[in-house]
Image (cartoon, rainbow, N blue to C red; front, top):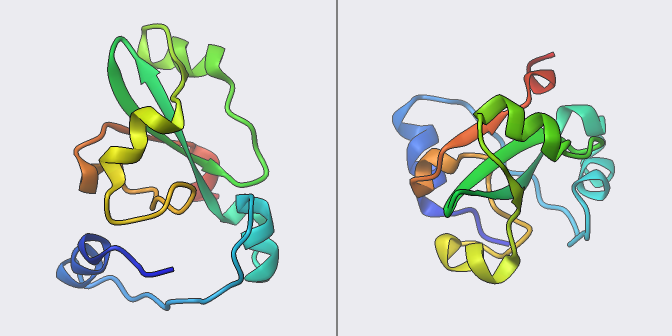
Length: 118
């Protein structure tokens, strides 16, 4: 899977050092973390949310499930999981399931679980 150019450009422009790791395709973020020999709590997964007609991105540890009730409370309005057909067009440069946890690169408000900073 190719890395979206906008992500590479963002990392380079901000002088972020990175390493591209190749792994077999996997169905879940937890499996990708396993393949990369990274603890699942240190690997971010993306969950797409719809709230009030707006698309939002949530990034959370791969071994966690999103609590939509808590999420809705945090943003102050109802929230539901986004359907693939609704958000797939937003990510024309990457496959569904391989979206980077950088919603800002796609014009999406993004909420990051604080546990990813631990």
